[in-house]
Structure formats: C-alpha cells, structure tokens
Length: 208
Image (cartoon, rainbow, N blue to C red; front, side, top):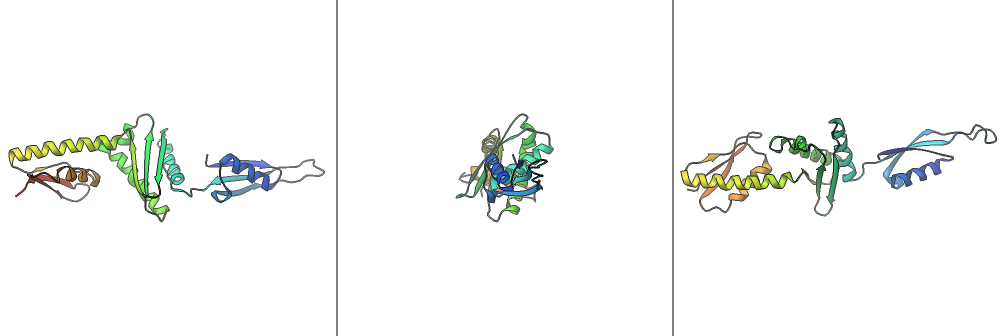
C-alpha cells in the first residue's frame, strides 16, 4: 500500500488514522489535503476533513519495491519481491517469485541481467550510497555458475588434448569472471578476454 485517503473530523485525527493504517511515521509520508471540510451550521451539513497520505520511497528497499513493481505491472506479471538489504556490506539481494519466471530469466539470463542493471542504475541515481544489486529467481545465478564452471573445465581439457586455443561465446562480465576464476590455478591453460561488449568473449589457450 503506497497511499491512503482518510476522512476525519479534524486534520490531526485524519493524519493519525492514516499513519496507523500505513504503519509509518510522519517523516515517512507526504500529506495532501483533498478537502478541508466544514463544520456546517450547528453540526448540520458538516463535511469531514479529507487527506491523501503517500509513503515516501525513502529507503532503498521501498524504492526498489516500487520500481520493480511498476515494471512488472506494465508487463502484466504478478511477481512477489523478496528484498534483503545489508547496510553494512552495502548489498541488495532481490529474489523474484511467481509463475513463468523463465520469461524474466530470458536467453542465457539476458532479461534477468537487464532487470539487474536497470535496478542498479535506478538505485545509484536515487541514493548517494553505493549498493551492489543482485537480482535472481529460481536460483538461476547459482545454476548458471555451476554450468559455466563445468564448461570451463571441459573446454580446458579439450585445449590440453588438441593444444589449440578455443574461443567461447560472448559473455557478460559476471560470467567471464567465473570462467577466469575456475581456471586461474590450472597449470597448463590460461584465459584472456578479447573483443568489445556485448561481443567480448574468453579465449582459453595453452600456457607457453
């Protein structure tokens, strides 16, 4: 609930009622007077005071929840958001839950990566504090990491057998780091990146 309209005999009564219903304090909301009402004549024809009270997006969690909710609403998707913000580590982990999450993952996680980048840029534009944003669903990030680690090992084995370098498909920086990290202690092969994003890719070759 982002806003609520409340009617009461007085302004103070209306504000108090709204804050209770929103579970917020006065510094966390914006108040708009819709109708100042009237006392009427001897109580006859009296009209209540009416206000609109809106929650401010003054926390990273509240901001991201509204930002992503608006996106999924435009996509006509019902998505549950589980958001964990670690202020000490300056991290924000966002778990998406719902039906047809494959749509939000996209081909090789491209849609999920786009959502993560959009959210990260929005957070950094709105807040001075830097947060490392991670968006995930159905444990895709871990499953993708395990797939890339196995790929790196299999390609490294082929390079050792054929003694010829092998270029992998273009990957984003996160995926390239997984390949580099998996083979960084290998005694026989070395990895390096070539090309420019979004076509930047890794080449695995024999050490000289």
